[in-house]
Length: 166
Image (cartoon, rainbow, N blue to C red; front, side, top):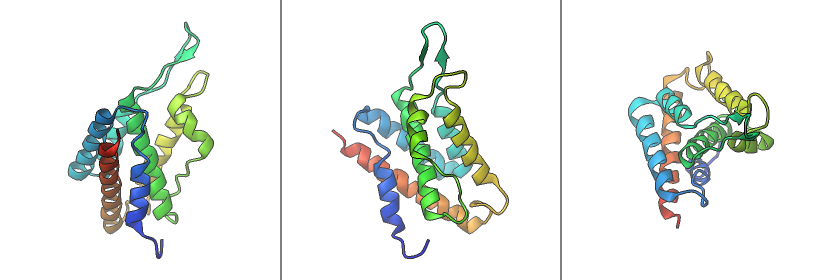
């Protein structure tokens, strides 16, 4: 991406992680932990950690309803969704993990059926595939450190935004 203010882009995506309708301290805690895992253990550990904290939407046959995600789980999903969007925006030539608007709602509330979390599962698989493919975004050590740096920057802005919520 040429002539782009990457810091501004990181801020935009970071600011969209914290949600006003969710508990401020829970969001701060999840974001802080994600930043810690990314900083100390790297990109793959960060993705695995965030996936493990994102929960699973399930269909309750007895009640005929979908289970709901907790606030920690929603925050973890927002982190990964914004990570995907950020990397797609700043590295469009080497990171092709598109997130469609109609998919976004399904990622957070699910869809009725046997696998209500199928859109989330597809997005996670797509992210993993993009991160691990040959000649992908992380095949080059310099690009890997660049990706780590922009994700850390995004999470830093997210943390400051979460702290500013009332």
